[in-house]
Length: 83
Image (cartoon, rainbow, N blue to C red):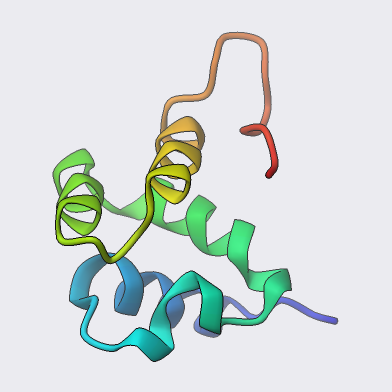
């Protein structure tokens, strides 16, 4: 299945910035979008915005950890570890 950027952007914004509904949580988006959404959030949102999403419980600890790993990859790695 193709991954559409407009959907990735929308899911990332709704989860990390708005966190307004449970329909936009990671458990409710197509599985093939989970990692691209984390990658998009890591690329476009500040550390404070990502932390705020975690503080407000819009994302879980593992989701937060994955997103931060994408934002600050370990030296010598291209991507964060997958779940």
